Image (tube, rainbow, N blue to C red):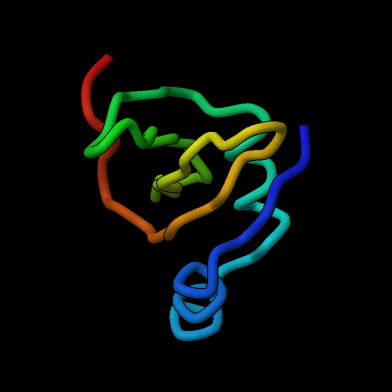
Length: 77
């Protein structure tokens, strides 16, 4: 499945100095998946002392990264 980045995600990745590789790793192999707003999904991956949260929406044949940011703690499973 193809992974795409929205314009908003591209902006936030630059502003927050996020690693695209870590975002792709989170999308491909999340530790936790939760249902988000408007059918979006919240994907979480632990990278040491912080967790990366990536918000995605699924479209025909692709996953669109909407935004991403670091959080101190992932929600409980």
